[in-house]
Image (cartoon, rainbow, N blue to C red; front, side, top):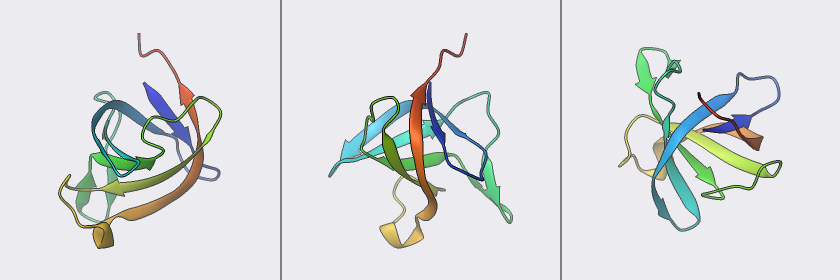
Length: 88
């Protein structure tokens, strides 16, 4: 499980990479974690750069509702630090 820790915000736990394009990775939220909800919209996907970050390295993260959302609809979650954890 990939965990992105962003200062002042709860960590984002990502389960699996769905695709990669232009250096960005599309990841699905971890199945046991809560979705990220803004207003009444549920967001279950995240775009991160780099697509597969090394542990301890910075990561740019955006949350999104649909995989096909245009970049103008990506919601910036800021920059965090990558970590890998076992979910067992």
